[in-house]
Image (cartoon, rainbow over all chains, first blue to last red; front, side):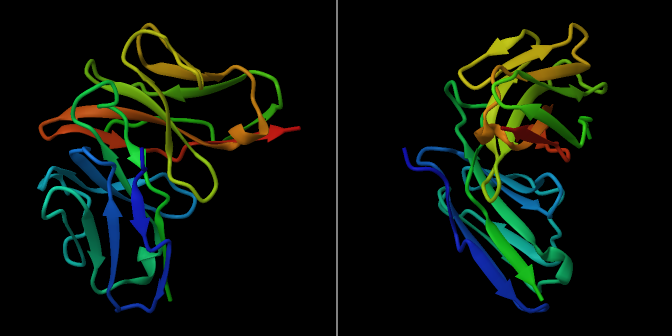
Length: 116
Length: 112
């Protein structure tokens, strides 16, 4: 079974530029999550989708961050414009809605963003 | 937000058991206790989860206190590959479904 795919692995941009991250979850997983992980901290949930609907985006800075999951499969997370404090690893995870693994999140390797 | 408290770091010798503690005094009856670990430059990896009873799987054991306000992840024989940050997490049921809240975790060092 293929895991959660994320790209790019690394991205360096200057402040005020825009950036987009892509995530392809495990096939059949209805729930998709985007997390932000700042160095030395645990992951912080930015947004959670169930199929193509948003379940929780309470911690998403909506003035600059946006995310979509148009067909209920892969997803993109965008930052526009980026700030220095957005430097972090952006993690995507997915989980199934049913079955033995329904409580388990499977994470991708993440995209490391550096904002200069 | 439901929170967990873990030591910042712990150290273990290789081949010895490791007990990683977690306090979650504000846990409610529907909150699941999950453990994930994160190796360097990787995303977190699921280890184990439970609700009320102790749980065992091929990776570890989870011991949950009777009042559910604390739990312990047990690695029966630590190896160098177990060196990672271990996160104790409450999976909280709210109106939108289950929500996962990560803390800072415990960094486990394993000595050869």
